[in-house]
Length: 305
Image 1: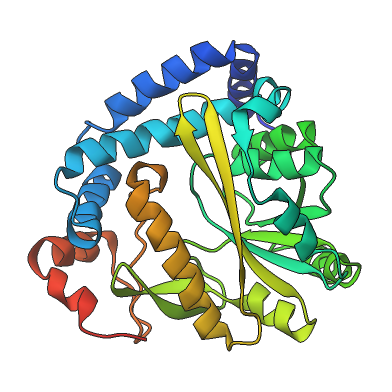
Image 2: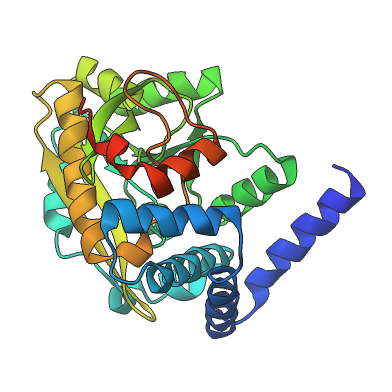
C-alpha cells in the first residue's frame, strides 16, 4: 500500500480511539457543515427530498441527513462503547420473533438499507451469536476497502463480497446450513435488478439474492436499525411473503422502507441518486438527473414497473 494510503488508513482508524461522546460531537459539527456546502450531492439531496419526500423544509432535512451519515461513520470506527452496553442502548422488541425466523433451518435472506447505523446492526447480530453474513460491494479505493475490512474485523462481522466468486459459493453454503445473509438493497447499483415503486416512482432495486433465496427455499425478512435519540437505537424486523414473485417482494420491501423513511427522513442517504435509472433501461447523467428534478419532476411519476 502506498505511503499516502497508509497515512490515510492510520489517520482514520486512529479516530476510533477518541471517546464516543467526542466523536458524536465532531460528527454533528462536520455533518452540519457539509449539509450547507454548495456540493453537487447536497443539491441532489435537496431536490430529491423536495420531489419525492415533499419535505416542507428540505435544507433542514438534508443537514440532518449529513449529520446522521457522519455519526454512522465515526461511531462505526469503534462500536465497542455501544455494544458493551447494548442492553440499555439498543432496543429489539422483536428479538424472539427474529430468532424464530431461522429456527427451521431454511436459511434467511435479510433485506435491509442504509438507515440509522447499518454497521452497528451487523455488529450487534454477531455479538449475539446470530449466524449472520453481510453481503457487500468492495470499495473502489483500496485504502477505503482496508478501513472497512479492518473495522468489521473488530466485531467479527463476516462480509461476503459480491465481486468474489468464492463469496457466491459461501452465500449458498451459509443459506443451506440455515444461516442468514443480509443485503443492503436500497441503492441503484450495477447488479441484476428489477423495478419497484419507491415514493411513488419506479426505483431500480437489486434482486439476485432474492432469486437465489427463493430457489433454496429460504425465508425472507426485512431488518433495519434506526436511531431513537442521541445514544439509543431500535431494531425492527418483519417477515415477507416468500411465496410471491420476486418483483412483488421487492415492492413489499420498498413499501416497508418507505414508511420508515417517511417517519425518519434524516436517517436515509438522500444524496444517493436513487431514481436515476428508468424502467426503459436509460440512466441519467448527474447533470441530466438534476435538470429533470428541477424542471421536469413529473417524468419520474409517469411510468410504473
